Image (cartoon, rainbow, N blue to C red; front, side, top):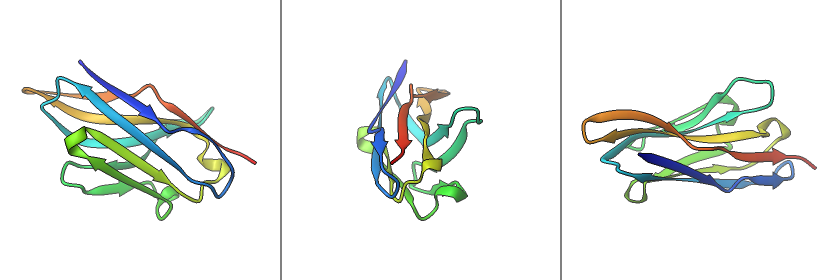
Length: 119
């Protein structure tokens, strides 16, 4: 079994910054893509950013230039540096990982971490 544990959420003022972390643990052979998604109340979950094992990144248009995703493959960890936060960034942020366990490929989600941007 694989577990993803997020940390780093919290309350921040508009214009502020936060850094989210997500650590994957368990019987992992290899992690392909890792990513961050978010879900605001009453809205669908949306992709925020993703990074492949080759460090290719992809961002939602709404966060380009403000958020940076990175990963430390040796630690099975992915980060999301969020700058210039706005109230529209308020959501529960979920970590996602595409994991290879021996010859089985499965997708996993973390439990989520709340980010609230408010003055």
